[in-house]
Image (cartoon, rainbow, N blue to C red; front, side, top):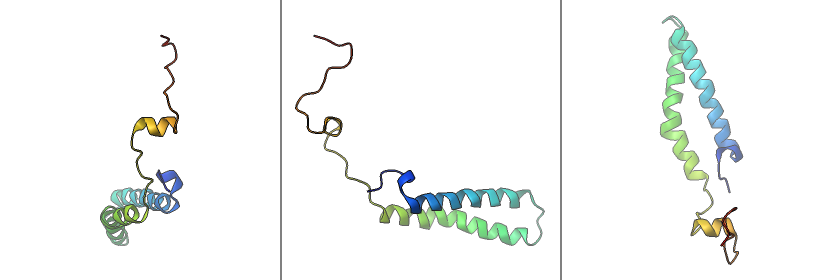
Length: 91
């Protein structure tokens, strides 16, 4: 299962679209308030809000992470009976 965005191709693609969208919004923001800049800005702003209100909830619903372990030691020890002593801590 997917544990982070680096392993999720769909989420990584959507993130790259958001980065491009923010760059477009910055470019349109410095441009004069004439056509086609106004229309491009409207579409880019619509995608910006759709990204957070529609696309991210869909991605989180579709990509299920691995279940959490019962305890941290179970995750770290992988079934070993006894924990090893920390380095430098001898009895």
